[in-house]
Image (tube, rainbow, N blue to C red; front, side, top):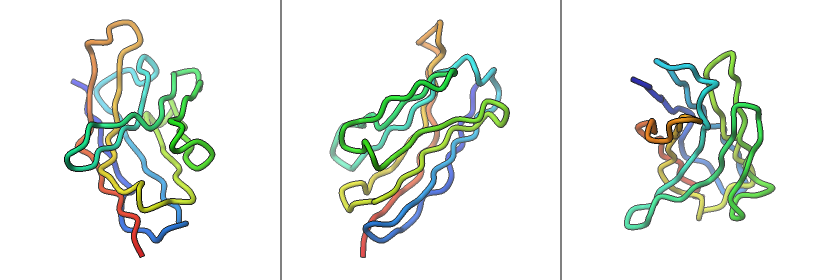
Length: 118
């Protein structure tokens, strides 16, 4: 069973930065595509960024140039560096892993709250 544990959320002022971390256990980390999603109450969960085992990344248009996803396969950890934060970035951020061969092996973390407010 894969376990994902997020950390690094909190309250930050507009224009500030935060780095989220997601530590994975119980699996061979390099066999999974990792992603960050976010969700605001009453809205659908939104894909923020993805990263393959080899480091190929994709970012949502809403965060391009401000957020950067990265991973350290030696530490079984994926990161989301967030800069120039805006109030509309406020959400619960979730880590996700999906197996590269068997997509039904799809796991979620518990989420971490990010609040951007002055």
